[in-house]
Length: 103
Image (cartoon, rainbow, N blue to C red; front, top):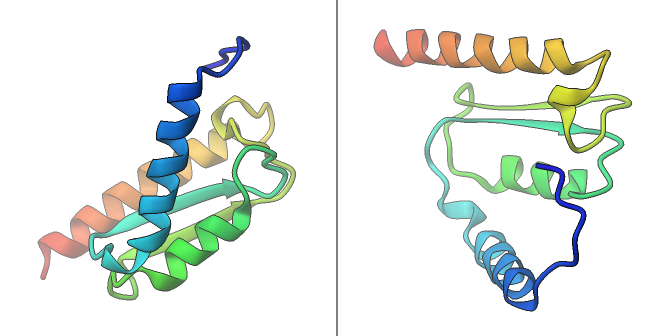
């Protein structure tokens, strides 16, 4: 989770290829999902989470985007918001499961 060594070229290329594939296939997402993003994230841009949320074909009410002010990339390690991030994810899973079970 906290690797500080040099990035291998093959790893970097695989990440780039995966990112490009995801970018071109955002509209194919149809399953329920939760996106949680720290507004101070320096690893992944918030713009990408917003694009996925907007382009996904998941029905409204089955997709959620939660943004956390002041949080960086590793939100669960955040001393202030970490518990909220965890609780929000757990609550989303419970309510989504209940909602889908009642359909």
